[in-house]
Image (tube, rainbow, N blue to C red):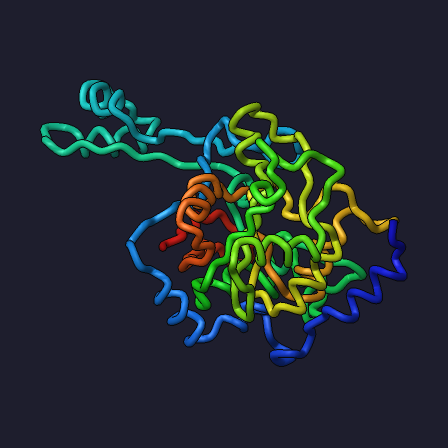
Length: 329
């Protein structure tokens, strides 16, 4: 196992602070140029669309982690209101909402339903914003960590990303298929930088500047079988941060719960690749992506590149965002 000295050496090698200016809050998304977006669009040959987002619901992957929970979906107006309020609502002088709704429905053909959701912004398919992870009191590009307050992230929030769009060439690296594993990569078998190169060569695909790399570990397929959101599986070894940096990757996503391997690989820190990517490199991570249908199609036609469209929601000051990524071939 590596030590913090090794970690700090790698951090210095991959750090992009100042690369795009002292005020930059986009990090490696700067690699996605207009030419890159045009290249991605040119990959669409058949109009095949693959949604990569998972269900946001009560049976989602959260629950094993006490600080997050699955979405709580609540109806605020429904058919029962439409039936009952015209009869009783106008008499509820102490309930102004019921009175208002009764007025809408009284002697009127119009009806509607309304709802709301309460959830962590990172409870299912999502992006980690650059403000999500920090160490030694600094965010990406040297912004102070205490600029993230109870009112949100002043610097590197997910809202700073929205104008960029996150549309680029996507490349699927199907590690679970490359290994010939039936379900998923069980714990203790981390994905190394050299293996990423092996998978790309075997698939006949190149990885380059501005690409969004999508890694399939089989974890989501396993979750659909078991419903166990806390079951660990292997992910990217922490040294893959250097591989991402060397290839000028714009962002990385995976079908597992944290992209990187849950076994740290660096003594004295929990998620070293998160720190290297988000805090040092300025590279966003996407988690809980459903890659099953896309992977099956890529294996069938041998084409592992596609247009990827994955903009976050513009939650002001948020450190993450739900997303429903779309791959188009």
